[in-house]
Length: 261
Image 1 (cartoon, rainbow, N blue to C red):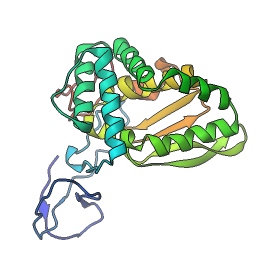
Image 2 (cartoon, rainbow, N blue to C red; image 1 turned 180 degrees about the vertical axis):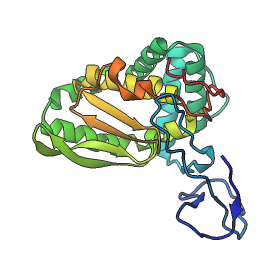
Image 3 (cartoon, helix red, strand yellow; image 1 turned 180 degrees about the horizontal axis):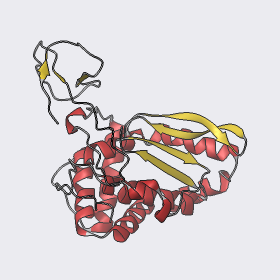
Image 4 (cartoon, rainbow, N blue to C red; image 1 turned 90 degrees about the vertical axis):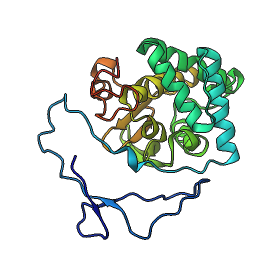
């Protein structure tokens, strides 16, 4: 992709890369506004083998709270315990490094199974049993799951909010819209998204809480929707499982589209 630096806004195609959140690192930015002007995308994008290209330089910067760091370290510890993988990094970088090692060292079936085991280890069974009892398949249960996700799991997926959608002919607030998934943004890999997040999370929530959920990632803008109460499509018919990986995949570092399998 051809790109050039400009000093001011001239057309709506300019994408300004700026930090929107506070970060613990201090950088002295130049006075000039740096922007990247990119060529328009090719309109011939109907081919299912076309790889998605996203710039890794557009990453957000997160300022994790003490609760966020506690949750991240707890999940990292649980993944380490069931996989035997170790990491020299801490915080979210450590979690990404651990999951990337799992992605490289196990096949897709093993990856999903190990993450489900880690989730069971992370959330005690009594809590899961209680949630299963008090949150039956009902409007209240679906809306509670959506609200609970936005409050307690933003550290994992990034900023998210509850959306209203139609469910069985009526409107419910049973959808979580993730503006830009932190995990997908950090890994920049479709296979890690599907095998280490989407598929195991769907299975874990359904089997542990009795609540079906369909996670629908948008690999173009890295957003995602979690639709509580909706069964996901079968693996062979799930569009997310047919998505080629990014050209700039951080995990394979090759221009292949076989990250999922």
